[in-house]
Length: 558
Image (cartoon, rainbow, N blue to C red; front, top):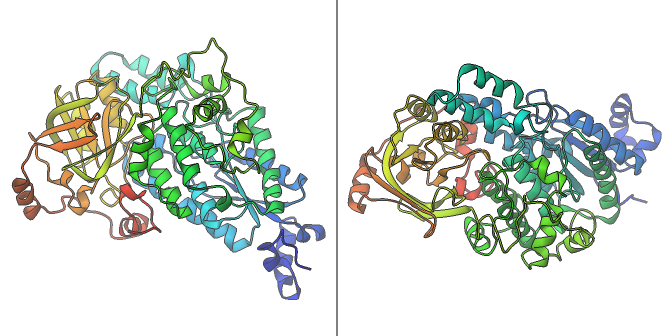
């Protein structure tokens, strides 16, 4: 009789013909009884490349133990990661978003190739987290995502963004070399993802709201007993999902993605969430568009006063209860769908039923009557500069509109040099182009220039637009994901120094004061101003990748 719990592993290990397979598996630790158990792959993103992932090998061991104790046979395997924080502002950053696709492909390849019946994926840095979920959605086997956890605060509550902004402060002469070195040496105290509501913590929260990680997985420090227990529980949870045939397709839906968007907005999360949620939805075959962020953002306020625009770190949010009480607030307000299924086998409402509210004394998460911002900080802008959309992160602290004079750069490096050399005047709109998915290739994050602007004290006086994207640590008047990108002849590639650009977060418009006839003339004489690779992974990516407005995926509709 066929074991329904082993639809994939049985093909690999059962029967006479598979004797060689069993022989190979005995060498990696399989015993007689293990061939009769469901196999659960533990996808580890461990690497000494970055502090975000340096501890994940230990977490993978805990997930393995949890799965084995529940009656499965767990198999740990690795995939790659790339550190945004280390490669930021360099040519290496071109590989960051590319790595999301490589990681997703690699997890799919191993799980499908080895015939695992279920999967635990463990991610810790910005791109490997959505990559893990994208693979889970493609494979559609019982699976749970585990967040590697946030880093502890550095000295004086410093984090990686403190270092980037210190560079701008040093260039402006407001701190000296000794102060800069002090920040450099004390900002990153150990393992874990960047400590504010940057992309890693944003995506962890979104994935929990999506129903694909266990309650509170997103709100635990990397070095903690809670995180080890989370991994053990995840291994056991996948075994339960195998026994009940609960798969991602039973969990994710239009409603669950709306929940994820809602939580991202309430937390004041990263603009990268837009890109990644679009990509994840494509993998699941669910119709999520840029306009969904606008629709939801009109009714959902920003409630969390967290970095980079606010005051508090993720560790401080964890101390008061994490995101579960916030989700309960949103549910009680009618802003979350409580009837969606989750990886626990219970609905979202059932998971949140016994969650206690935040302590009355806390001021990290505001009440609905006193929001940080009455509607979303994530703005989807359209106009003659962004016919297919652009993504802005407007906290309101910078104002809601900006009109200024274009200063155009064809790379991040050119723009950063101008900022650090003091060549940017107040009232300037810095334009960084040829940094989109195809033009980079790779759609680099612009944390270095945005941090340099803030460090130079120009946050309220200078805006920046790009067909690249931003780190979750970026803040100020910044607009990314401008589509179509410059490399395909988009309007951002037609801009000239001195053009007047208007950014309006109230009307959600991104426009240039140049008439249509002149723009058509510029289009007729436009030529690509940048050479791109013709071999290797970047060239392959540039050929396959979709527009940022579609999630910048390599296996979707182009």
